[in-house]
Amino acid sequence: MREKILKILTSNPKVTVITPESNLLTDFGLTSLDLAEIVCDIEDEFDIEIPEKDLVKIKTVHDIYEYVDAIA
Image (cartoon, rainbow, N blue to C red):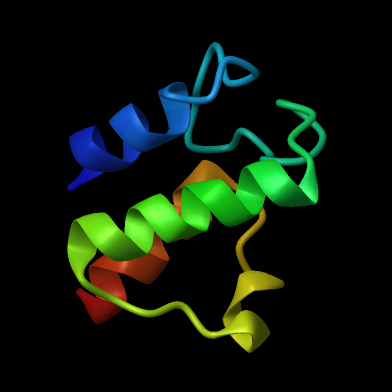
């Protein structure tokens, strides 16, 4: 699962060195459009839907891991 998420994240050229603590906005400088594309790719890859209310809780790479692990 983590490898798939890392592959999705690194498909964005702004995402370089990734650690679980990496903050999606401040460390990578992702825009809301970048985040939307990443979320869509994650939803497609894992056949899940991430409600908008849950998106505000996802700030780090580790948050993505935990969220996907909990619902996938």
